Each structure stands twice: as C-alpha cells, then as structure tokens.
Image (tube, rainbow, N blue to C red; front, side, top):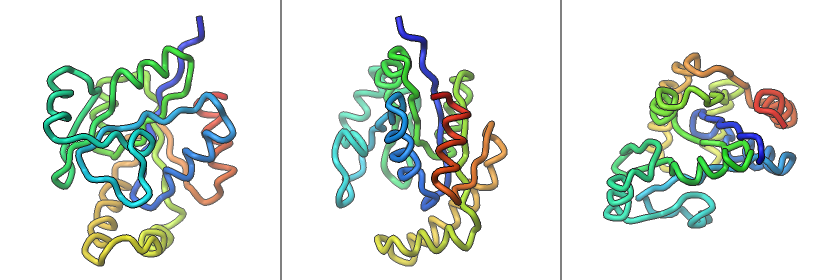
Length: 184
C-alpha cells in the first residue's frame, strides 16, 4: 500500500502566478496533482472543463452540496466554488501531493477542517509587480482590476495565517522550496 500523500493548500492574490507555479511543479514532480475545484461560473476563454474547473449548473452544485461531495464550498461574486472531497481523498490515498489552489476565505475554512494540510501563501515580489501582472493580462476592465488589487491587499494581510510564505520572484527557487516543504 502506498504511503499516504500530502495535502497542500496554495493561496495567493490574483496575478501572483499560482497556476504557473503549479504547472511547473507538476512538470518536475509526477506526484503533484491539482485538485480541480467545482464552480457555477461560466468558463473563460481557453478554460477546459475538468482541467481548469468542473463547470456545473447551480442546481447540480446544490445537489452535490446536499450529497456531501465537497470539503468546503462558498459563494464568491455571485458564483459558487467548492473543493471536491472524493477527488482529494483519492489523491491522498494514492500517495500523491494533492494541491488545493484556493482563495484565502476557502483556505481558512479548510485549515479548520484539515490539520494535516501544509499551508503555503505565494507572495508577489512587490505590490508594484503584482499590479503590473494584473494589468498586463488584458482580460479585465478597470473596475475589475481595481477590485482584484483591493482583494490582493486584503489577502496579503492574512498571509501570516499560513505556515509558509514564498515570494514568487524566481520560479526555479519557488519550485525547489515547494519540493523541500512538501516532499518529492
């Protein structure tokens, strides 16, 4: 029987590079798996159902809540998001490193439920660099950008609630640090 895997919560503000870090980590460590969250929001251009999110209707989401399918769930900006319990447990039972890429609100809820989780907050090199990254995406209008920046400041203020904080200024160093923290 495989040794039980590790649960890693990875949070950070919009634009900090969470997806890039996870993708690179997965490329160097075959045991790293991303737990794909459920959402009721519509897919953005380039997003794939089952890879980026499990996109479901509100009715289906609420049915899954009733069935106890989620570790945690929440409503954010009018859409529902949730962490699938079965998928996460399957990864852990298979000896994998199960990554929850989750916002601070969800992470704080999971921390109360899962004391076995390793919690990591990804920080930008500077607030100026974070703002540059968010603006350079070219996908959001001014009001959305301002909301993302406001949320980023609020999330960064809660970074001390996490066991580890890593500044995303050098991807190779970040991956080496993740490997050291979570094993692999």
